[in-house]
Amino acid sequence: MTYILSFIVAFGVAAIAGQILIPVLRRLKAGQSIRADGPTWHMSKQGTPTMGGLMFILAIGVAVLVSGWGGQELKGRNHLYVFLFALVFGVIGFLDDFQKLRHHANEGLTAPQKFLLQLSAAIAFTVLLRGEGYLTPNLYIPFLNRELVLPWVVYMVFAAFVMVGTVNAVNLTDGIDGLATGVTIPVALFYMAVSAWYGRNDVAVVAAALAGGLSAFLIYNFHPAKVFMGDTGSLFLGGMVCGLAFALNIPLVLPIVGLVYVAEVLSDIIQVTYFKATHGKRFFRMAPLHHHLEMGGWSETKLFCVFSGITLVLCCLAFWGVMDRYPM
Image 1 (cartoon, helix red, strand yellow):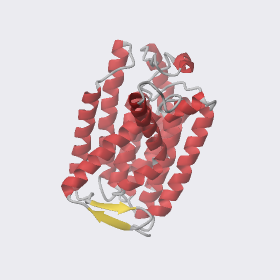
Image 2 (tube, one colour):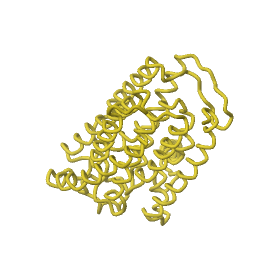
Image 3 (cartoon, rainbow, N blue to C red):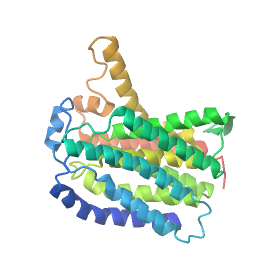
């Protein structure tokens, strides 16, 4: 099957790319700067090579091209659209990482700059999918097997909000060794399974490539991490996670398979809101949620296992919730 080839190619390319890229990043002194107001126990990570997301971005790109080259099983171009959409976010992340390295600080692009770039990418992707006939304004409701019909304008606003929110939630989850990688692998496998179930081999190819590339990246990113994905990788992953949901026209599945992402971003919002409302008091020991649990004694390995395990269970539940939309 084409998507199995895609997984194998992505895994192989990423595994090889890591052997080449990490030494290059070290020579270029492309090391991560740790925030001064971040966890003090993370200061030992200072200087760990970042922008490692380049290895799985390259791997996924190669896998998508190899698997889609003249493939008779692929009936659409969604695999290309989803990859290019995520790649745009990867470029935004690369610019952010480059600015951080250039100024030897933890701040890159400004928040308004990132927001406008991300919003533009989200709108362009939604318009493209609509123009190609891959997207409808009918929101499929998992488990109920019903659709909520929305006006296109309302749907476009909804889509832009969900895409930008998802991308930044995934970015926020990338706070400890292997966490964003481990959480996103089950999500990628979920999309691969759903795509195959729906007969959407074009989408299955890119989902399988995502799973394969991340599985190889985890070799280098698991605690203690030899390389970080950086915003280059985390924004790309966010683009893939939401891009695949919209390509399959099941965006309401995101809060289920991405509950960890949602919990991370909500913990940050609650912390900031509570801090301002109480003039300096904290709701969590530290935000986002993974730092709160770290301060409660959880190791990075335990966080990785628990959060990834929860996501795997939720992905199985989500598959049951959407499998009746296009039964085999």
